[in-house]
Length: 390
Image (tube, helix red, strand yellow):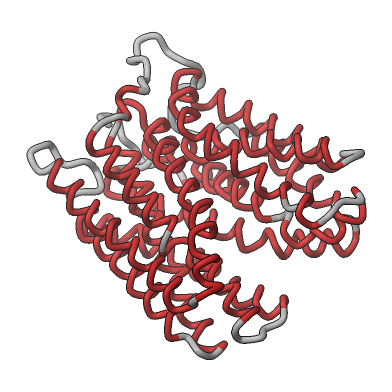
């Protein structure tokens, strides 16, 4: 980036705040299942599709959303998807039946697939190279903040009227639509190379995809197993388990900038191996958590290190394909959320038979992630260093 400058914080703030929208929109529905059942006269299993139907199109569209956004123009696309997210939120708030509600949730997921990769790509354009890791760390902290606030605000809305939660997401998205993000042209420009899907199918990108998929299906999804253990094995109430799990989100929020600064200082090789090794070890240690206190401490540490892994992968993806940053980010995020979807399906049935085996199995997938970092560094050793590798 020849003209790389650091944009003022006030100009970067919309990028950071936008990072909250995706996690918030995903999780806000979880505390309001009883109210949704009553409003739509539906079963818990049917209402739970409000969560799943958001994630499925989100993960699928992520494979192409970043590249399409770069082609259409980053600012124009982000602004348009904020408008779509707001409209879908209004449809959720006004939904007369469950089918309208589920359709609107699916549209929210599609809109969110364009937001995250294009916002991080925007950061890469407006932040000086020496500060990029720190900027991604701050962005990850805002994402964690959105995930932490969602169950609180969703629960408060459920106690009054669950529809107000979606009025809130609509309002925030509408405000953000009026403040175009920095980075990238307002409209597509003919002089830029047309971002290509084929540019994503490189050895490095495939290795990164395998690495983040393994991490997400294993140690990055460990909080699902922690929640089950807290309720079924340690006898915690729902509220106590929720508070325990909240500790991980808070730690991810607080440590994001720290991980970003560390990435800038030591480079992707050391940061990636440290993050992947740390989260793998903590996931394995959770096997021995036999009290709420031990589980809470290890869960908090896991949350912090999960944030570290996310920072490294987002930074690597945004610099591996500089001509299609948004496409590279969305490609990697698609693998990540596919892994998050697979993790519970794989390990919860194992946990029903053997709790330690489930934790150790999930942790073991982290070794694949560690290996992919070695492979990525080796495959790029004869190439000019990308921004995080210095």
